[in-house]
Amino acid sequence: MTVSTRPLLLLTVALMLTACGGSKNLLQRGEVLSSGTVASLARETINRQSDATFKHLASGTIRRLGGDAKCDVTVHKLVYATIKPGGTPGATASAVLLVPVESATCPGPFPLLTYNHGTHVTRAESMADTTNSDTIMLTSFYASQQYVVVATDYLGLAESNLPYHPYMHAETEASASIDAVRAATKKLSELGTSLSGKLFVSGYSQGGHATMATHRVLEADPSLGLKVTASGAMSGSYDLDGTFVTVVETQMPKGSQFSSMLFPYAATAFQKIYGNIYVTPTDYFKEPYAADIESLLPGTVSLVDLFKKGMVPLQLGDIVTSKLITDMKAESSGIRQALKINTLLNWKPQAPMLLCGSSLDQTVPFKNALTSKQSIESLGGSVSLVDVEQEPEFTSLLSQLDATQRHMDIIPMCMKIVRDRQLAPLR
Image 1 (cartoon, rainbow, N blue to C red):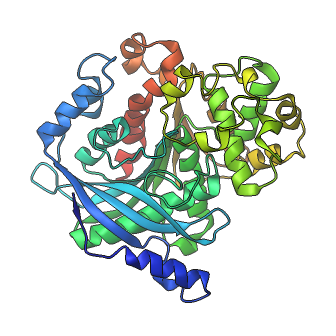
Image 2 (image 1 turned 180 degrees about the vertical axis):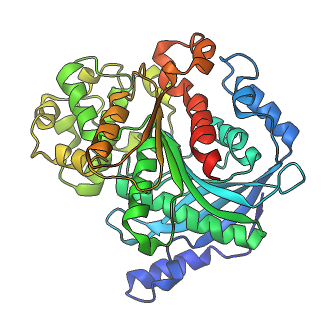
């Protein structure tokens, strides 16, 4: 990996000056603090990687859905300046930048897509890892098809300096994504990459929530200087409060799929952000889980191993206390107020938005998309909605899949829908 000559000392000096009330211009949002070239991927390599991803699907599924690569792609890692929860300066985040190489089969100029990934429970996981399945799919569906892609790792993950991840926090999901665009634009200028001026936003699961948050902020604050062309939000918990309340009211003690991990992840993050969720972890979580829960998510253990090693139980009722359940039923509680702040209803997008998901999703209910569409239309707006289960082109593929894995397995289907129906006509 080659690294630019910009010294990382810049970050240290800027942080010191900011803390002392000195110049804040040294650490402007979107400032590129370091960058490096991770890999150069030829079209043949991209095709092979696509064929090897999602091995439980029929051979070549990702390549068939994404299409044969038109472009070689250069992979860069960026570390950039952004803001902490509450808007204070001094935070850093990392991102991958996927740049198509102009050629006869891959002419520019290119639109720019800012992509938001799904839940990562391991702190070190990075979108700049070219073996990451999300990164492989972004390369196949977008970068090799003439889109420049920047995908943030969010705050508190990969190379971010924030000591925790503000999970499902709409404000910093949006700021991390927007500042990644700023950093990417600077790097692309340095590389001489030709951009069309079109800006797209997309993401899956947590990234679907982040996509809607980013779209909303970009339209609410023209001073950011970025205009969203269109967005594609996929399988996100847009009605975050309603989703969590429904689980408690109708699905206890089992909970929904992965809720025994998702509830602690959100509650501990909100405690670190707002400080009023609980007094001690034992208020909300049973032992032996309470002792380590605040450092577990994110941590060093994979999602599979969290359950396999018994670090979180399979059932939600085995980890949460009666106080958490009581607080979830009280709208004035800290946890409910945090969920409401980060719920993304009651706004109307101006640029086109498409929502994609599965009505059989057992992790993030499709009701999120239905409720969001209803909310937008009640305000006089419009939004496209796609249920992959109703799409004839996916019937054969969906029949291969275990219903319990729907949430993860429909990612490439939604990526194709977003690209072909939402972004391509506007690029």
